[in-house]
Amino acid sequence: MRILLSILVIFFTCQVLAQKNTPEDFGFRHFQTIYKGDTVDILLKSKKGEEQKKKPIFLFCQGSLPIPLIIKDGDGVYGTFPFKTDSLEMDYHIAIISKPFIPLVVEASMLGHGFTYNDPLTKHFPVQYSDRNLLDYYVLRNLKVIDFLEKLDFVDDSKLVVAGHSEGSTIASKLATKCKKVTHLIYAGGNPLGRILSIIAEARVTESDSTKFAEREFDYWQQVLNDKSSMDKLTGDTHKATYDFSIPPIHYLEKLRIPVLVSYGTKDWSAPYNDYLRVEMMRQKKTNFTFNAYIGLEHNYFLLIISGQPNYDIFNWDNVANDWWIWLR
Image (cartoon, rainbow, N blue to C red; front, top):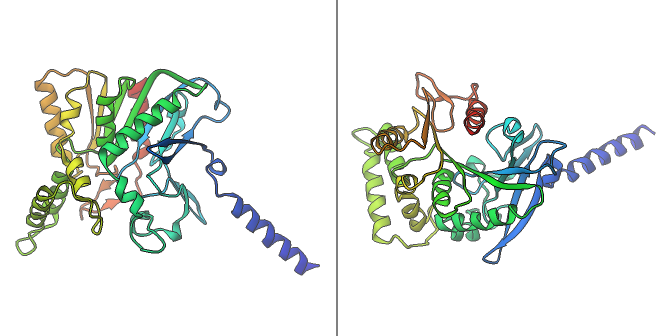
């Protein structure tokens, strides 16, 4: 009898674990639409019990790399949004779009460095992802998603907030120039002068007389410029991706007349460029810009300690997102 009971317990546990493989199991609504023949996965997070209540969309644009939206392990689930969504859920249905050809739900043990998803056969980023990992692909795809979402019965289309962090900030800023439906933009952890300057700034901090890391990055940038349309994906981002994301987003931002919140840590590699953006928007008398500079925090809003390493015990993302909610109100 004891053996039978143990078998039943194991069977039940396996069944429960097996069932937790869909976004709905983790509190999301899962929608799909089609863009250029590709299936696009969209997750919506809504306040429990208010899923059908009419609210605007808050669209959050993911950062870089092929990272699944839902990463699970024995301790629970992480990924999706880097912040708690409770306050924002009061006023919005919160949307996020998966990276192209990256599974929605993946075990953490199956992922590579930085929780990136690799093709099981090649052990590299999926070819279909790399072929689409381009600024304009994301912008035009997100436009399609916005049109899809605003046709849903529970979506209030009188307001649309678009937010993005890191690479997502560039996507969000260009999207805001292309979509007249966007009423508010949150530009977080971005570099208004482009990706290549973030790469060089990071190299400057870690280089020495003997290493000269930044010089290597200037050489890399010259290689990109020599063949800026190259889609060779043997080494990380394609040249085209690097080039497109290095076009200074300030060119998109300064065109905007809608309210814009710029959010960044003062110890981020990109902090001086966000300070420059602030000075320049003041010079241009652009009163639609608000700046939240988080003193002593790095790219992901962790506090930097004396050694220059992030203190991962102090999590500030929730405070940042709550400030977004306050600004929107």
